[in-house]
Image 1: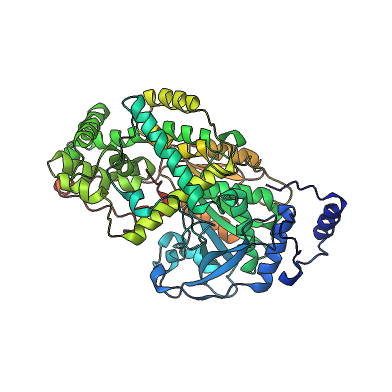
Image 2 (image 1 turned 180 degrees about the vertical axis):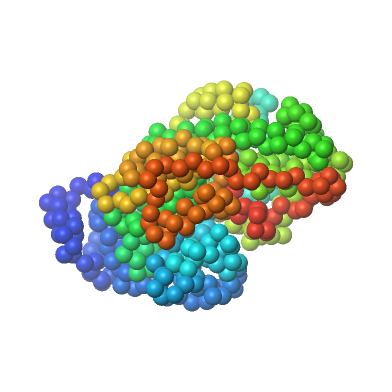
Length: 558
């Protein structure tokens, strides 16, 4: 949001001159001597963007340990930590790109990507070109594919809230409390986590907001030499896109938002997480129905009730005696929630579940247990969760009353037990947050915003459908594509020609349909042969396999 700093007539003069396009950002040497001098953030971002446009990006081969092969290149963009102090402390935002594959005449600029989170890295986006992803062949002819680590993430001034090895250590306590003592223990852990964020990353916390990340995105746009932004955002990336479109409507060229967060001020973020609990239960039920339909393959029960009973049996056994001494109910939820998230996980999760039911306990252990030797991966997981918490806590004022949290989640758990308490404990640090909490920006279309393409599955668990409807209502001229009777998260990454062709058309021509579109669902996952289902299930490493969702798009679980 724009800071309403009281600078008197001088501020009015500065803002007016800048709006008229007559004021260029002065060089760093001309910065005010008083580093406490504050400017409106709207002015600060324009100063930072002008500076970035002059500097550009020094593209080089990516560091070898970043896992980004040639010809992908990497670089850095400097942004203010605090946009009210554009001449103050800066942080470096890591970016990468791969050039468009088409002719010079075909090129339309850069397409910038955010995968969600908060806490997700977009740095793997250019690999859609190097791995020859068929869905993105046409777009890659027209656009450089550009990814970035948002502030606090990965290589961009990463934040931390707890020792990474401690973060991944298992087993954790069962998130479903048996009594008040269990709740007190979870509340203590949440408060300690909030304290750890303040202790380890306190300087960054007040500035870990979605509006600041949107400002960073505009500075990246300028550094790329782009007059206007082409943007693809998924999940939380849709909220980032909505905030960007609100702050910088005339800087948008093309924008696709996929699997949409409801941007209503009263939904960010406490209510959003309560809404997830309901939607996750719906999609969990969908998966159980599919498993029951394929009982000849999985042997987990031929009705949803029987599959649920088998799940409860697994939970109870893991609670009494964690599998391998490592996998308890918390770890099980972290793994099984992949099924409501993504259709691509339906088969592998069911296979692993079936293997356990057939007597192969090791299959679940191998799929779920943390790898304590993977210190780099563990640090990345902890960082992602830290950013998730920091952004959601900083974006909005959260309830501080435990009575409210307890009442709301106890009531929800009665009907929607799959994720409710796990989600509550994950977000509870915001109740005792030790840093500034903001008022969410009022997202909405302003003059100059071109048509935005909104894509959403009807039964999405992580971002319920009403979010897409609400953003569509707020962004005049937008078009909504609904994938009917489907629920996978991240629709633009799925094979559905009704959607894929419209995404290509929009990116290549800017054209949208005359009215909103409803598409039939993509293909339902096909259960494998019975023999394969009872074999030891494959390890579900989220970083491996083209069909399995990227780790950064899965929620962190404590």
